Image (tube, chains in turn green, yellow):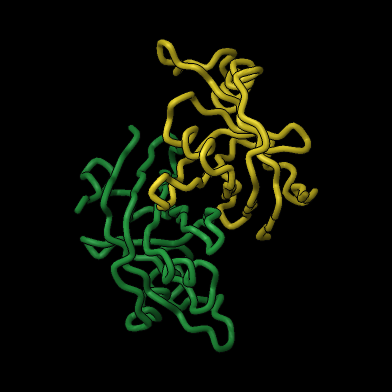
Length: 131
Length: 131
């Protein structure tokens, strides 16, 4: 079990994106920027049921995250981890919380009809930082 | 073969980092921010011999890149591709070119003793953009 060091703990409160890497069914890597926060133990991200990323995480729980400080791209937090839970429970509340953090909006404005949000909990296993 | 669409071609001239995802020997993903540019056909990145990323790319040439506009993180270029060449030839000139682009310096200032630079040429196979 690894944790975000105190030196980089402020990144969770910034509008810093996490570039979340997963592995596709064909063994190629996949990476997209995502909103994120932490519950103090796990990294929390949010996706939607049926998306490539959700399917990848169900098949292979191993992930890597690359998080740069938006105020200084050379200040960096890298995390290797494993998905320990994917749940619809609390996922709507969490995406609204992310909309508040990143957009200043009380409700997530990009919801699609029929979309089912999924809260993804990632346990950090290795953490490295730069600066 | 895919190309960067005209709408996002300006990103190559910005100090935008590419989050480059590869796959580790154990099947887990790896992702780190890297400097990049393009030769008009391939995405060019630069690494050093013996690094995890270099070893991963020698084993598995499939990569994904996530590139956000530093002036608007929601403006985004995603690339899936394949390494078509890894060469020491031109690698020193390229890392100096990247130091000029990203740091405004004529020479790459972080070279380690004995470090051998490797120029990595990535052929884009799928490109997607946001905004």
